[in-house]
Image (cartoon, rainbow, N blue to C red; front, side, top):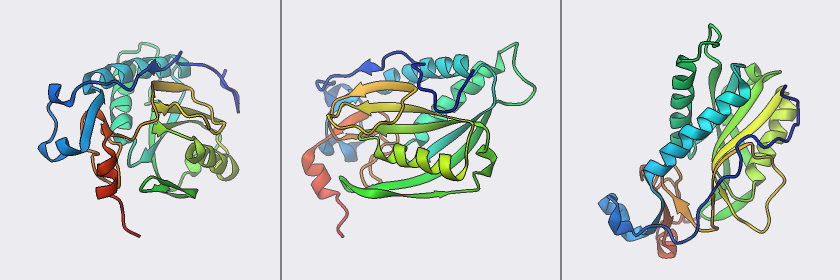
Length: 228
């Protein structure tokens, strides 16, 4: 039974990733990004295998209930696509499946950062989300650092849409001293507090097409920062 506001551990502990990573020379990287990357933190193959396991856990938790997946654009797109594809494959071979697909897609755009600075507030852009009222909602996020963005988004959904249940899955969770109180139901990796790009995660719209999750050099953030 899924209850409103429930806080349950559904995924076990995330995989702990240290700050050593892998030498970038061991991987094929786009030539135009090589100078900006210090190391590969998580290779693509490990990412995809972990997403498959998370999809399995999510499928077992909801057990054929209809779930509205909310993808936070743009960074979560890569994680969302692989997660949804795997969920659909699992469902395809489920003998106890319903006659209709249990996974429904929604997309929201939430802006809370410029360069490396939090704006302190969020701007939410989306299509009509009234279909989420009274439904099971799973927010799909790429990276949680302070958790402020997710906290504000959940508050906005609860106040304006009123879902039955809100769950959160994120691919990455940073290890920070100060983190806002936001539940995390399905977490892929626990990562150090370093500047991460790749697998859809960007820096001012750069590096989304990088297939591995990598650590960005400090000089690259300065070179590519948005001038106000």
